[in-house]
Image (cartoon, rainbow, N blue to C red; front, side, top):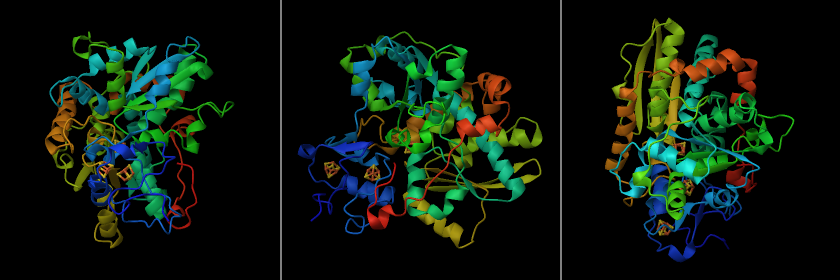
Length: 458
Ligand code: SF4
Ligand code: SF4
Ligand code: SF4
């Protein structure tokens, strides 16, 4: 008999999940979680509990939490442990905040959907005990520098194409479970929070004379899957001589941050705006739009164009890669080089997309995949002002990121002066041996989960 009660009505959730949990007493058996997992995420229904040894297959995306009308499903509340330790003077607490958090956090405090609350958010984190607040957008710019370089290398060598993005851990896990044959096609780039994590305990610590063993690094993200991502084996390689050190110690979601701010009785709306700290605190428009579906692709094209031609792209916006269609396609000229790209959002669309690609109907060079419909602005840890999260909310958050991109002087990742300094003084160049050691990773097939119920590392 299955330990997962009512799994014909609702999604089964493993009790040892590090990303999501369910409070059974609150469940009204509405079935929303099952529908979203099946139809939007393409996970429920693609496995059989009798085959998996009663182990629920889950990519940690948290979309079930976003549609649960009673809040029975929510993220694992890691902020509670962090809250207990944050006043410990033995440690330096370094936060980073993902692009989408700043366009959603304000909703929790009554601001209009899509309000850009970056300054208040940074200020709130300082009040909560942060010693430094850095911007994940810097990590996103770095990801683009490495990923665009990797793409062009692969195109030159004609190997492992199309290249798929790898910054969404739910998509990575989805590929590891359902399509391990395409793992060589995934970019080896770590996600922005993991890149930044590796650098905080090496480069940043060296620059500020901090002991990496006394740093607690916290990523604030819209994402529940990041909670599982930081526990992957590959997380440990920034400070080799201390393999027990994590690159990222905690991931807390936008919702957790909002709860913490409320519990500390911080009046969010009247906070003075504060700025990020330097070294990894500068943002370009390219790194910011990572938060919306199509944003990673658009950011990568801006930099790949510069790598190929040595010139700045004149028409910098790619409207045909924006919007919420499940699969978008475009052809882009990088000088004389034609690039065929696709953007897929919602992992259920990956099943469809790979069928098309398998039939050889289309050829692609580069494919972005984001597990959540709409990208990270609709992540599983974002505010749930309406149940389920409406399309209008998603559009407003996304528009806020594109508006900010438009307003910035620097809109390409290679223009980020802190990232330039990082390469000049430390990493040397994209794809260098040190960049590979700190910023790249590998993947492992998890197909056996579908058949043997063998538990594998996140
Ligand atoms: S987190 Fe995602 S994959 Fe896991 S049960 Fe929920 S919707 Fe399904
Ligand atoms: S969405 Fe929430 S209330 Fe509805 S079945 Fe799932 S857990 Fe229960
Ligand atoms: S799309 Fe973004 S929020 Fe959703 S699982 Fe992927 S990284 Fe996390």
